[in-house]
Amino acid sequence: MIEFLKDSTFTVNEVISKAVGVTKRNYFSIATLCFLMFITSNASGLMAFFLNDVSKGLSILMAFIFVMFYFTINLSLFRYIFHLLDDEDHDVSIVSTIPTKRQIIRFLVATLYFMLCILGVYILVTVIGFPFVLAGIAVEKVSNVAIPVGMVAVFITWIRISFFPFFIIDKNLGPFASIKYSLATTRGNFTKIFLLLLVLGGFYILCLFFGFIHWPVVAFFVNVLSSFIIVPLSSVALTIAYRKMIGEYKGEEEPDIIHNIV
Image 1 (cartoon, rainbow, N blue to C red):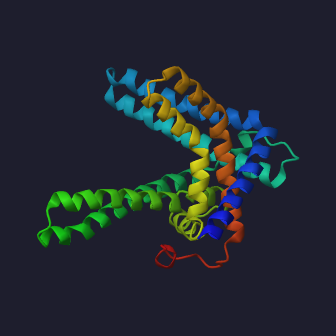
Image 2: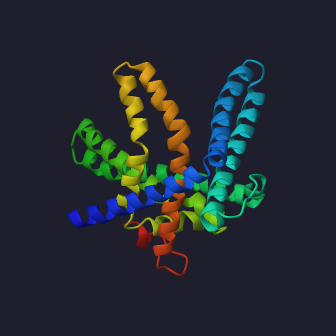
C-alpha cells in the first residue's frame, strides 16, 4: 500500500510539473478562456435574476443560452490544451478550437447520462438499505449509515466517469461510449486522480477555511488567486492526466461497464 501511494504521488508530481510548464508558456491564452467561462457563468446568473420579473420564459431561455455558451467555451478550452500538448510550436486561434455541433450535442447527452449515473448510484445505495428497515432496524440508524455511504459512492462515481468530455473532444466518441471509456481508463487510477484533485483543490479548501473563521479579506484574495492561477492549471493538469491514462490503457474493443466498475 505504501509503495502504491509512493507511485501515485510520483505520478501526481509528474502531472503537476508538466501542467505548470504548459500553463506558464501559454498562460494568457488559457487564462482568457477560463476568464470567459467565469464571465459567462456569472452573467447568466445576473441575467436570469433581472429577467425573472420581466418574463420567466425569457429568463429560462437566456439561462439556457448562457449554459450552452459556457459548455462551448469549456470544450474549446480542452481542445486548445490538446493542441498545446500535441503541437505547441505552432499557433492556433481560439476560434478554430470551437467544438462541432455534433460534439456539443454529444456532450449534452453524455452530461445527462452522467447525472443519471450519479442519481442511479445513490438510489441503489438507498435500495440496498431498505431491507434493513424491513428487518426492524430503525430508519434513523439506517439513514445514518446509508447517507454517508451514498455520498462516498456518488463521489467515487463522479470521479470515475467525469473524464467523458475528453473522449468526446479527443476521440470523437458518442455519449454512452465516452462514459464507458472514462470508467475503463480510470480503473486502477482512482487514488492518483483523487490525490491530483486534492492538490488542485487545496486553494478552494483554504478559501472555505478562511471564510469559516471569518477572515473575508484573506478568503477573497485566496479566491482571486485560485481563479486566475489554479483554474487554468487545473484544466491543463486534468487534460494531461487524461492523456497519461489513455496512453496506459490496454483495452482495444469498446469496454463494458460491468467489468470496469471495480
